Length: 184
Length: 361
Image (cartoon, rainbow over all chains, first blue to last red; front, side, top):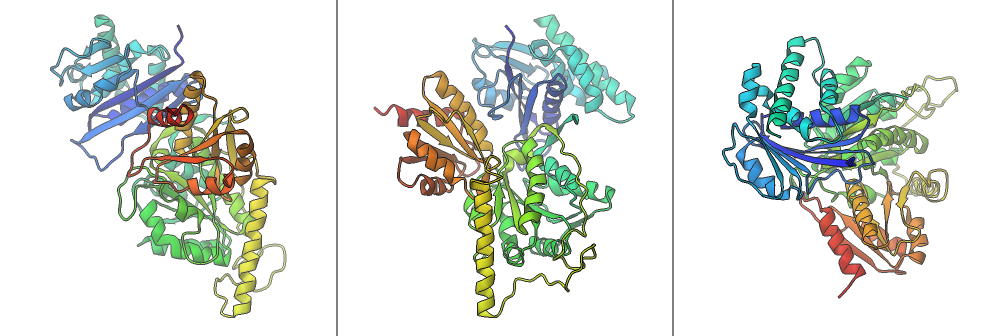
């Protein structure tokens, strides 16, 4: 049942790499030949504040890039769940960072996937790639972008000669993907 | 065909300007347009261009006046309060007939307002903004691709009409990323304007003067009628002439009973609303003006014969709605729905407004 459009909201603290996480999804969507849009909630925010970002990936022309009812919410911290969980489309998916979110019961009409993103990121060597762990988890749920597509997008996303940085990101991506696969 | 790249709207304007032969940028940072000067501060030196972060908006617009007078392709950009500061210079530039590109990435006003997206500078943009009898050509993109394409088109129009061109965008379009195919580079010759100061091209020229001062009453009247005639030529070209298809986008209007009207980011939301209406059996259509001055009045004159009503949606308390009313000229009712202060109306609430108009209880 090939999906035509995926709408995603990702949210967390400023500094958790929310905008980059959105860019990972958008770049992967674009490189797989789909239409994409990426909108940051920009404001006077800074590290420690809140950050969120909306991404649309579609086989068709994207009319409105504004996401009001996401198919998926990727929540990196507790305030993000509180703010966005009720907006998820019925039957949609919540992927949440269980390293920072204790809550286990959510709405009964959505799929829920717990990813200990900070812990998995630390396991590959750097707590800062928790956002990329979540991108890997999203690859498990996307009908429009498979895991290989994400891997192929990363050299564009992490350009330059720092090979270790690319490897770190790819390891984080795989951690997230494997974790989502093992629980779903 | 060139490869697509993922870019922010503000950056796409910057790159498109460079590709259009713009080598001079003068500006001052303000959210939500700061990515544009940031981009050009890095990019212009790579092509032997000049980037100046001026001491103020007033200084920046007068630097634009100078560079434009010398025949260069030149740009400045700002967001609402900064554009207000530039209005005096824009009036001088319009009076002296200097081509240049202006960009307003609109934020909430009045006053300092906030940094969220808005469309409340429509009147300022389309009615001149500064003092005197003058007009600015106003382009309204609704995607990152159009931010790039209209920047290139804007430089061409500016040169053709010897007039300032304003790209009217908003915080969403400036900040959002979408794939963009960058336009082909233009080989611009700074010696192509015979009227420009320091012209040193093939043709012979007089000693040139670029000025907006006409102390003699008769001279100023003659000059103002000359400008007026130029604006008439522009109006004809954008309504019935060569640029009529450039000026407006129509979507499912032929059989539409209700026509939704919006520009910029709102037109994208309205397209979703039209799709949802059609699924529910409501014959809705969309008119999106891509040029806000001269206004595509002819489209509304035609559709006023076939549609029952119009609903204008804006991120303001209602500004463009006046142009729609002038164009429809009382033949059919024109309604308005708006959100302001930085709130973007959702497709749900617009759909609700359509329902109220189409199925009144």
